[in-house]
Length: 114
Image 1 (cartoon, helix red, strand yellow):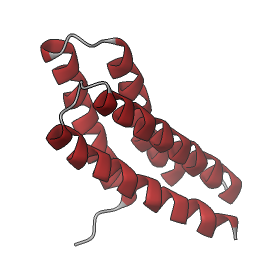
Image 2 (cartoon, rainbow, N blue to C red; image 1 turned 120 degrees about the horizontal axis):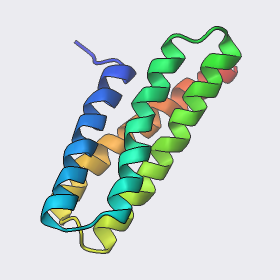
Image 3 (cartoon, one colour; image 1 turned 90 degrees about the horizontal axis):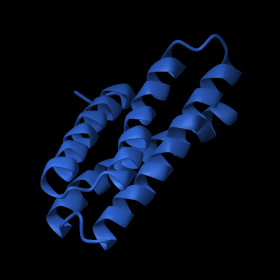
């Protein structure tokens, strides 16, 4: 059975929380981890809000915010990798999940605008 965008974003948020715990406890990195935590968990929160939207413009607004947060998360993940806080193995899997969410949200935003 295909997972919904909301389910995927929730699972992604769980991974982000665990990543931040790892960065804090094992790598002693606090600044970027806070940023990726805020942006990465905000994706799902905005999707959840969009599911309860009062109108099509409200839905579009929340999904657009979720897309912007996904793009920001993408940035922080790449920065964590390039600054060697994440190994290639650690980076690839979570980054693929982030890109998948970005693609899904882009499609939703484009379709809703039509």
